[in-house]
Length: 146
Image (cartoon, rainbow, N blue to C red):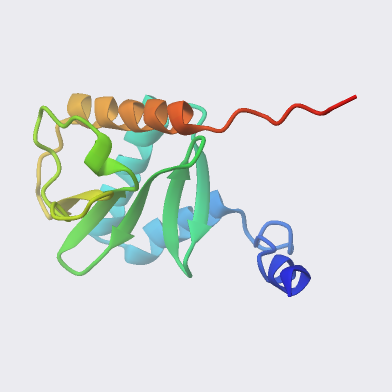
């Protein structure tokens, strides 16, 4: 069973398909409206905040940014671009960016509507804090016995 599951988890890149970054590029182009522009802008801010970020494409079409675990996802809906932080409830948000999924115990999200202003400095600080939180929760490598 585990082998079958592992075979199904083969990435698009390994299967000869487009890379996750290429798939995100495609989504931005496919949207062709303010949502694509906003997703591209958010993506740029994430990359500026964490140059070592890894882009993934999960759950049948969701852009995901990771560094020692998931930082956030970037979902697009008709009225908003939703930036969901996997461990957002554990992050300080002094600028009050989180405005969605506020009742959960773990996640927090930022819904960004058309024409919304982004506090870039605060968003980058939130991204860096999420990276730091992930790094602090990272399990140390197991020591091999001789």
